Image (spheres, rainbow, N blue to C red):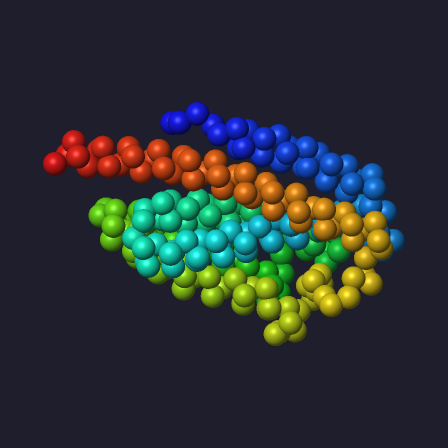
Length: 226
């Protein structure tokens, strides 16, 4: 593998520092919510993780579209990397949501529209990798996966809008007004979103580099088997 670019090294350090600052802001700067208490602080990580999950799936859909248009395998590598990261962060969002729900809703899980749609979204992208595993030809696999990533993205806006389209007990976090949050809470919330976005770029860059190495290994394996 080529040496790590200096910009990526800097991004690694920046990501770690931002995560440390965001954590300190969550627990020391943002005030305690009166009704929910300490468990409300999960909110900053929960929303940020879900934001990255949806952003990653959007990146995967765009990469899939560009691959179908240009046929450059880099976009297939980027697509796979984005889906992997999206799955991981969406799972973090589900887990942190359950941690919040236990003391607030008195249950780890309920069949709320938001919980159902986010779980379906997660399973759709798990099936993405099952599709890739079932196709040996690299070009055909990349084409089918690109189409799947584009179609699968339809589950993302449905998940986001589910609490607005259906009767739900899940709180609506993103609204036209930030009156629900105190200034310090809002600042911490926005900083957490920014931190997770930078972390996403960092992880995506790392995963693409690994994917390109995997791509080279696969090409060599195919040449040796000819």
